[in-house]
Image 1 (cartoon, rainbow, N blue to C red):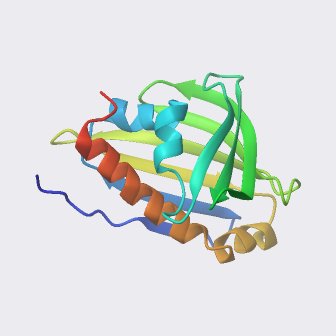
Image 2 (cartoon, rainbow, N blue to C red):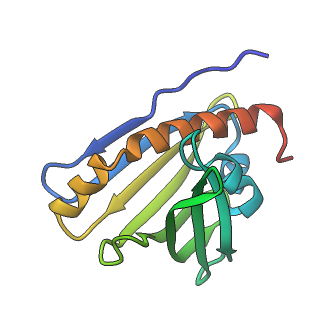
Image 3 (cartoon, helix red, strand yellow):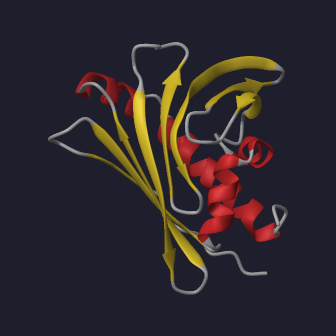
Amino acid sequence: MTTTTHETEITADERVPTIEIVREFDAEPDRVFRAHVDPELYRRWVGPHSLTTRIIKWDARTGGEWAFANDRDGEEIASFYGSFHEVRPDERIVWTFTYEGAPDGVSLETLTFERLDGGRTRLRGLSLVEDFETRDGILASGMDTGVREGYEKLDQLLATGAQR
């Protein structure tokens, strides 16, 4: 089996405190979407290779809530929580994302799943935070490593067909 490596683009807007993440996947939008809303699938791919994810609560529907923790060697390193504001199957997720260690730093994220030729998907995530200081702190936190490594794991999950 041939696996294509796709570049993860992470950009910060100079005018508004946003972070945009764009990544393509060799899978249909319904499969990439499902990997974002199914808690068992999500925990298998999200975050860096060095951490495991433990789902605490997961209600992936408009108005639902979620929470998960990242562990290393059985010890909790970080935890996150938020609300699902809109869940539109195979198209869009709008949710809040909060790091428990900085509860005032809420991010509003919009994920869109764009169908591409050849059974592929372009995932576009746009995160809006309150100010540039918060945005720059997120960028400096090493989130880029977690995003890139998480998407590598998602590529492997999609390639195995484990979620069908």
